[in-house]
Amino acid sequence: MSELKDKLTITVDEAAVMLGISRSLAYELVRRGNLPHLRLARRIVISRRAVERMIDGGDRPHGAG
Image (spheres, helix red, strand yellow):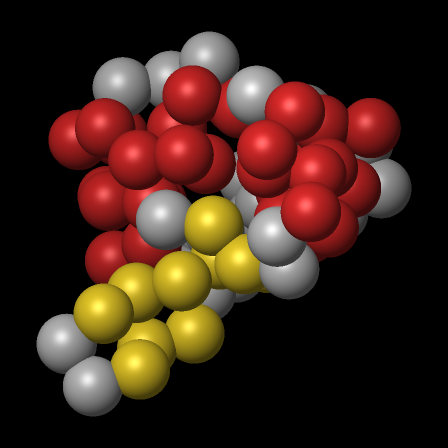
């Protein structure tokens, strides 16, 4: 996963791996707006730093905790 450290954005699949959740749950969180994302045409990208903040507890999704 060291190659992810150099990227500003990651895919939903990569975010799922970082968060330790399933791919389908990651897409569900995107759909609900609980996983911060950016839609570029048909592609969805997620800020790697936002996911790291979520893991560290600094950017909890709605309803977490």
